[in-house]
Image (tube, rainbow, N blue to C red):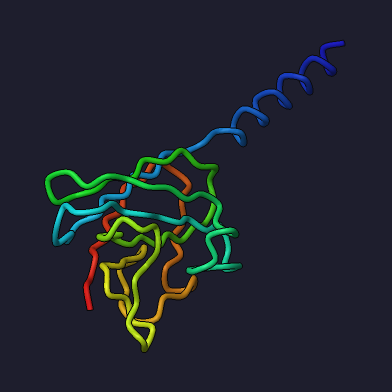
Length: 138
């Protein structure tokens, strides 16, 4: 009986520990105007990153206030990459030139410039974390 009780308690503790979500706070800086909004897509693997929003783990919209935008998410522990863009014209699409270069501000986790890829953008999230993404405009 005690042996069974021990395993039940162990199972409940393990389930509780693995079921915990952690907080991700993303501060977006370098926004050149307060027109429009910030759209984001968060990926839990490289499949679809950065442009296929249908494969994003989470996606959403945040408003710009005081030249900044903040994304707050509760997520299961894991590895992620996030892509954001400043939708200045409020059309829910990233405006690009004929070369495919963005005409609106863009940014990603780890703040690397150039063609975004998952490997350069990925970060580990195993405890509450705050990251800063600096937008850049072409």
